[in-house]
Length: 258
Image 1 (tube, one colour):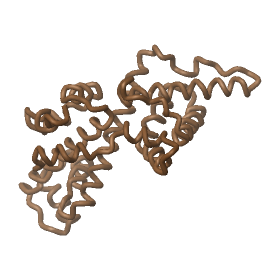
Image 2 (image 1 turned 30 degrees about the vertical axis):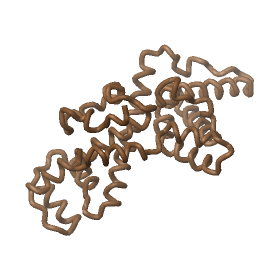
Image 3 (image 1 turned 90 degrees about the vertical axis):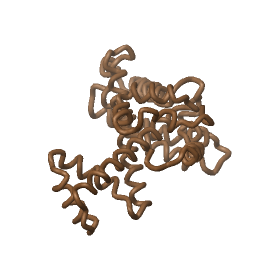
Image 4 (image 1 turned 180 degrees about the vertical axis):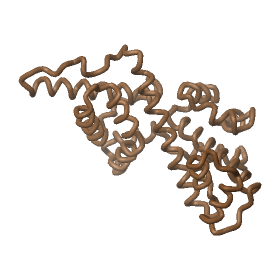
């Protein structure tokens, strides 16, 4: 696991500020950190929420308007009723977003002389609804993982994990020799093709580790099986399965966390 010992992994996971703890702080008016926590929630999840609203509201202009309203309500703390005992964070966020869409639509119908067409919003039982939300959430998880990888590179002077993966993604058909040459120019250091391949593998492993962190972060004290189930549900399991060892669940999730 990227050179970390089980003790290191355990300490890192225990110290993580989970989404649920952030939600609790965001809705505790007695704390000075509430506003900051709300801002962080918005920064992390506004894109997923907006993408979902654009998928279920069949009017691009109104989707923009409603999405902005939802973000403002998130900043105001409209998730006070969120409870980890009621399910996954992403599921509760989806329900909250849908409820906010309904509330907005109801207010618009009261304000306007002519009622808005309810068919402009996809129904709860629309077969594409779940798929749309999962797709929005999956992209959000990947975006946050890329951000974490970039932050990791910035904090580690000798790391170029983010740069390497971006090079690989930008030039998928380039050879290791060609990419090594480009990396050499960026870091101003001679990088051989073999060294590039080694760095690329370590970068992919680091990305997989950060991805697991991000997915685990949306679950309240999950077991290793819960974590794997969520990775499968989000279509992200191959990012882990192909890069980490066959015993990744045991090594990633120490007994102390189960």
